Length: 134
Image 1 (cartoon, rainbow, N blue to C red):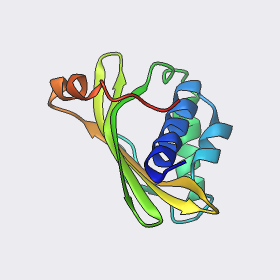
Image 2 (cartoon, rainbow, N blue to C red):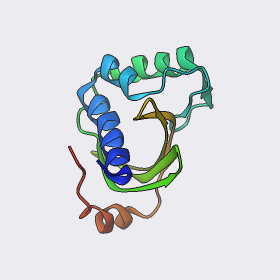
Image 3 (cartoon, rainbow, N blue to C red):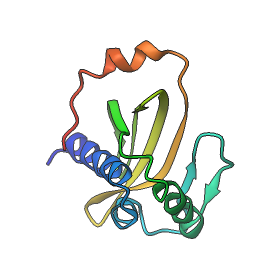
């Protein structure tokens, strides 16, 4: 699978875990590394495997993530590092997101996720025509 498709597949895997509320799948999407980071909307920056995964356990336990969709995902690679920009759409909410991945053992694993409010509500609609891979 070419890099761009593999990166987007890794991104889709993250959002499938998010929408499915599965902490096990969420853990599998992330690198098993102490240097991972995450910034949820309105949260302080989180770092380290324990802190980041604890945050996902809290978020996924609410059961309110089933309607999340990533739209307009664009992948960029720089050797063994890549990032995806796009939008997170949930009922009544639109966020911009950046997900950073590293290639580990031939697989792309997330090392950073950041999402925040999007002021341009039409931007996601313009980008939504770009299909995901899962």
